[in-house]
View (tube, rainbow, N blue to C red):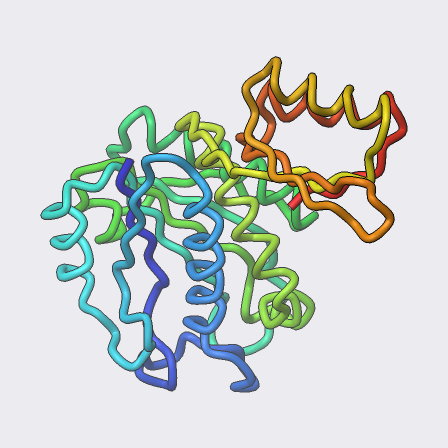
Length: 260
């Protein structure tokens, strides 16, 4: 699956407006952080390629046409645009989360938008402003499933503080990735793990060796000064039947072990 993430606008004052009223944060600062964390999280899933539509340095506000052309040329499956909202350039009481699809949205865009919206509201506790339609360029000119998310209001004092928080940015990224994983059925990459366990002698040593040999597991023994043996056993795909069998065996016999 190919995914293009978009951090709306640019930083360093490049895009006029697009900042907290007191100037303490540019919108792109939040957008880019969410994109960065989403990219990191999505790298843990199988067969996923992630691209970025904006300038990662924030120094250039990449034209919208260039962003959508790039997505179309790469034939990505999903265009996901991240934003922070505003009700003018002064403080206001407007608040909450809203997610957009194009006015002639496809079925999958609407399905994803609804999941994204519901998960963000649940994760952040912010007001549910709903899923809406709009004639935004990045939704109209992309030829694939596309959503645009307004995570919270820069023009709201309380929500502006959240937008500046790294914890909130990670929370939004995690919620967005959870939604993508849910809708597209993405699978996490398996991680190889090893069990470190010891020291063994006598019947305990025989039991460990019998288990490893019966399953055909690789093991590396090391003799300690007291004559007992330490073992490195593996590698196992994390969460696999073999790893569960190994761990259950160690637990049921009361043997010391570490997983790395």
